[in-house]
Amino acid sequence: MVNVGDKPNTHRIAIATGSISMLPATFDLVEAGNHKKGDVLGIARIAGIQASKKTSDLIPLCHPLPLTKVTIDLQLQGTRLVIRALCKTTGKTGVEMEALTAASVAALTVYDMCKGLDKGLVIEQTRLLGKTGGKSGHWQAEDAGVDEYD
Image (cartoon, rainbow, N blue to C red; front, side, top):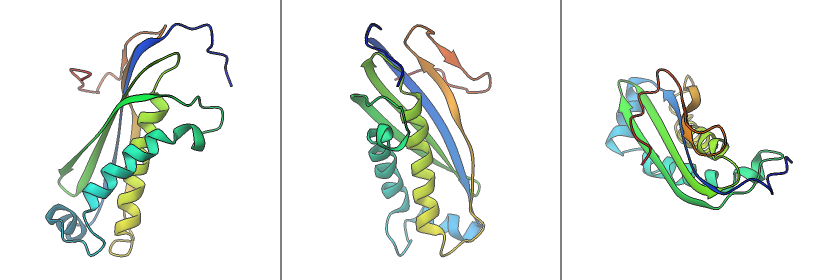
């Protein structure tokens, strides 16, 4: 692991996104909340939050972080579910991996719950939208459309 012991604590925020595309019939079940396995969106949200807290257990050499906030926003668009994960901490290293892990696991949870209905589910475009804090300061993807880090 990289030694971060001498780095100052700073307020850090990261926002990641991902999406999962599905058949219209699958989308309709997810949107209506009528999936036989339960509330797909609610379970995906909890899975993403839980995964963010376990990132250092999943990613080798990733520092464990005391997260102060995690939000998972889910938007249904067309036949896609768009996932936006925001993670916050005050610490010596960034929360990018936690946000990316949260978005990824939320998408994987939807996949797992819906794979029996739809073999063609596609997880795509998982990426960092932006981050603040630390020595490198603020960074944002050019097409991110993130106005605020709340």
